Length: 217
Image (cartoon, rainbow, N blue to C red; front, side, top):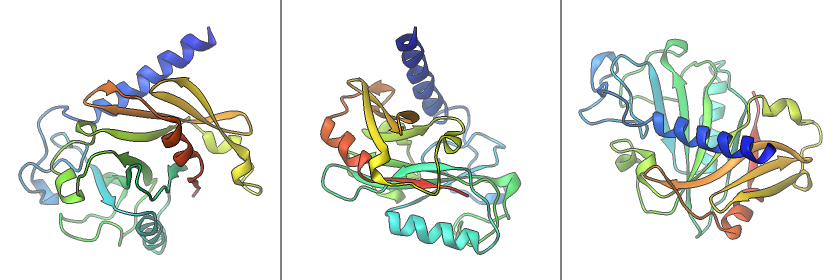
């Protein structure tokens, strides 16, 4: 029964990620001034106030967080990996709710403002792609590695004693594993491309496990 629950959970995670992309007519204008064909990497349906902005490195990610915090922004608990090496290229996506953010137009600094409940996701790309290309395509079109956090994962962690020795990896399928903290599942690690699961090697899993970063509000 436990194994069945894991399989169902993984399927739901994949379906949720894919549902972000290619879902209805794109919002390519309006008060945000998006250019024709703009997707933000995920696809923005007509009338949606979702916003997606990307940075290339963990250092840029931390800089963006600090800039947002300087305006009093708040964040959802996020779990990312900061791996910087030859196995894959890590990029970071900031997801904003425009209804809970200061208004900006396309081309303005998306991090130099106030926003509420900003969520951050890291992706490992096994294919070469720039952010300029990514925001006019879909992240699911690429061979990617990503983490999907368990609901309320932050409640399972003693934030006063976080260290590498508390993390472990529980292999489930060739494409799927669980990042654990003191034996508790906190996130799923998956690899996929174009709605299909791909092999997640132990080397890649280790690269993620040894570079896990927990971002709390």
